[in-house]
Length: 270
Image (tube, rainbow, N blue to C red; front, side, top):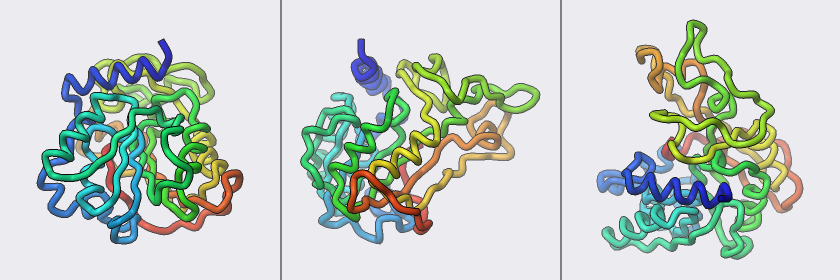
């Protein structure tokens, strides 16, 4: 079975179990949808009339918020069960959301330069190679358009899930191939999926080489000094679990230029 097929089945199974990333946005979040997804202003105060691609973002936690904020929303996801949640959540609220079943590294169903904004929550870890993902995102994004993505940090995927006397030690090589070992009961990994570690040069370098200029890079704060050892917040004191990147599409698909830091965080699930 291919990685794509394995992870498609795994996410369909997680939907059946009502896993935390398979739950649509709540009604209270729709009272100020843009404030929920972009309270600090990365999107410039409005997405009304903009074409927004929610990439590998099925489950309804994001698509209906952007639609409620006035965007023309397309959701791409590998899991048909996740996409069904987007359609159901949109229909219940009288919103329009287009869904496309596809892998994030194969967007041939989407036209070139057809999106003003691409929102890409944590998901690159489910593919063994990410270069094609960033190339496809560049192809479907207009010049000057925004690409906002979040990823599991490589050091978090290297580190042990439980602490030793010296903290959370690195157990996986940084230079490695193949999927990570399976986990059970982890707050940081999704049971049943195949996950892969991507180095910083794959993530940051890959986005730049695809034709984006990085404008900001953030590590969302999850550390809690009073959390008990082994808890998510305690582990985050030692290693940042996620990185969030704001990038802008340049006029070329082959080169990027030096980034100019600007902007503030955008909300998205971990």
